[in-house]
Length: 153
Image (tube, rainbow, N blue to C red; front, side, top):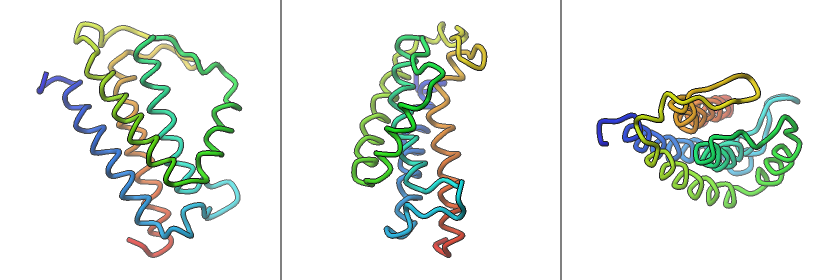
């Protein structure tokens, strides 16, 4: 399995979580909930998203069923509450990253081409198991951009 997609994603997803954490820690503590403009997201909001979605992606991979529905209000409320506490974000990020990695490693090679119906159309399981890695890398970049605006890079 070391050369498999799952093996790569184990290592890459763990590293992405570490890099995301490092990006948040580059932002001064008093600026982690700062937004550069009214609609822009804060560093903590983005990290909270990753922490929560790593868990819901683990559920999705396990069940192969989208369960979040089309009403994201519960997710948005949970994210807003979590985004107030870096310690809680960090704990959930570590917990859900470990969980999603375990689930990714359990996906049989022959299942990777299976599709899962999503609200925006079908996705293959290999795309879904790649999502936590991609999402954390994306948000690491966004958080680093906030840090650069604050002169922290």
